[in-house]
Image (cartoon, rainbow, N blue to C red; front, side, top):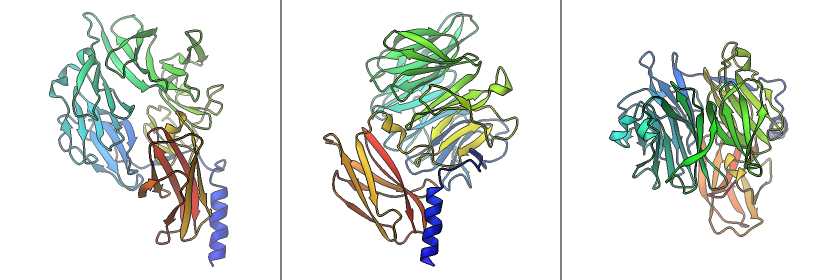
Length: 423
């Protein structure tokens, strides 16, 4: 019996990346009548959704069972139209909405208003965490960018884009692999172009990097080159050698989310305007050399992708009217591994029964310890410990059900993930 089970599970593992017979995207059930604005996965593997307050159903929802059920987490929210979510590496969650920025220390069970005086911002459109302790929130007017350099304990205004005759609002913020932080903005009630801003001192001060048309999203490819999604103009890439923006995708699409993962993949979440045929998700398998639409599984009429995020085991979540998830894991390393892939993760035997030996090597000296995390097939964290370089760690999984598990080792500079089979 065990032999038959082993053969079945081995075949399952070997064919897990073959998705030709499956739709690329699988819809996740969410409560009815939600206007979804952002999606996030926390360190525990729970999924969070933010929603605009249509039909009195706005706020923040959390699922602890891989999207099967959802609970509303609005305790402490002054307004329940929420636009943006983020979490730092200590587990604090941030939510931005109508002129307010909130934080939660208990996974959304209760929320604290970060700074009541942020009423000058029209909306907090984007929140990003990076470089360990820095959190940046983007809005408009006086509070165009709010900054915390101490894990959200204290905040300051670092960019004011108030104008007498037109309105400018931050649309995205990205932490660059080169130590520079970039932000982009759109301008309303004027024909003036939007802006790309840059900060060379970890977000304390900002300067104009370049003009833009109607920038909706920023990102980086696997080589660290800056990407900019434009409304109706496709995708641009900045050449730091020539100081020129290259128009690398000019199909008329409107990318408003850019997600780059290892293995040379870049995902673009595209707005359906100016044409329904231009909406949905575009995918590049060659680090931006070419892009193709990948909308298999989306319900007809819902090609309106907005936010893209990777979960803890390498699947991609996307908002496209509803919430969808890629059928299989998309990449073999964490998104954080773009900056440094200096470690080698091994686990043996694989498949395993009872216990498995986990071993990591590094090609350079690594003074910072690694965290070992193990997730089940739904992305739920089931084990966490510290692991040392070149020391075999024996993990006992004999009390767990058979199936696929994901081993992840990480420190602030490097991350690697491995799929294993327990029978």
